[in-house]
Amino acid sequence: TGAKMEFLDKSFCLDQGTGAACGNDAMCTSGLCTDNVCAREEVGMPAPLSEQQGPARLANEPCNDDFECEPNNSGQQACGHALYDNDSSVVCCPTGEKIEVLDEAFCLDQAVGAACRRNEMCRSGICAQSICVDELLAAGEQCEDHANCQPDDLGRQACGREFYD
Image 1: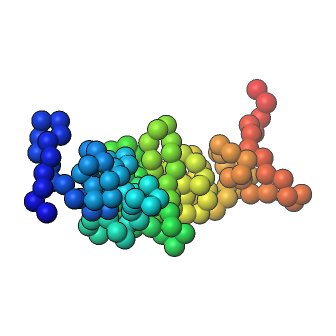
Image 2 (image 1 turned 30 degrees about the horizontal axis):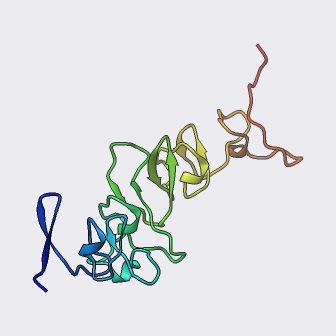
Image 3 (image 1 turned 90 degrees about the vertical axis):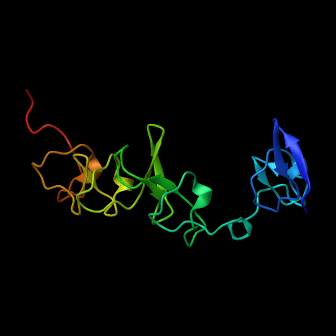
């Protein structure tokens, strides 16, 4: 509409649509600015991704926050480090799922051979010696977690010292 307002010593356009960035309620056509996003008046929540300005980012595209990413089939959105490495790129996670480790987000579904910290980080579900592997460890192999070991004849899985010293 060409209308503007002064906010924090700067001029801003009024009549911002649902999903647009905002600094206060007066900037939004709905009259409701929630978490710096113009929200729908009737529910007081930010607009769904389909109504926000700009297309959603696809898997492996750079991102800053979960809401920027295209949701998976379950509606989950995730933005995290592509690999279990704080220096790896922060991207929209391909599966829409991530895990928090020491206040950092990492995408799940890591391939065999990728670095890991927890079993759920790996596509195979097995993180052994900080590497995603595709098979449970055989008796005598070094392990960190009972769940990473092949079961014995009685179905028990055990990770421990080979000898008492």
